[in-house]
Length: 215
Image (cartoon, rainbow, N blue to C red; front, side):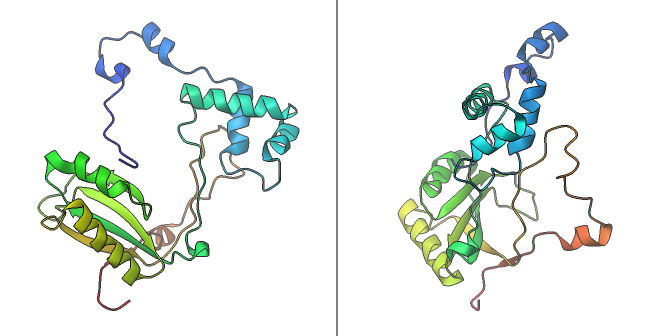
């Protein structure tokens, strides 16, 4: 399932009797050079023909060293994900619908995998219900050029995955915010977003509306 968050807990969290020595053996050892490299890439690569060479120049090392150490950090799990943030609107996908489904608990894995296989679906997450007000437990993001196209894609998914009896609704986003990763490197204050003022924070919440007949 895309974005699936049902992974079992790791060995450390399952064993409350694990002592400090055993725990330290499982902690990743990150050098100062690794931290500098993470800091250099965590907000995006330089827009050049050879971004790793530019990062290497900034860090005083070689292009191959940057590539090799990024691969090592990924293999070790220090970097969980290394990917591209797509600006959907610039590509013509101006309608973004979060489809929420009330799926029987024993079928979430099966149906989440079925929905997630479609190219128009970029997220497929299981989430806890918040009864009695919120019964939906599967969230999927569907993109299209307009709301009618999104509704048509959802209809196709319903028919092809056999979801006719599954309650669902489409929540369309009405405002887009900048997509960015979190800041992990210590001392990275110059690129960290400033704390929002209380009144701004309230206004920054993503507003969602139900699928309506009118766009």
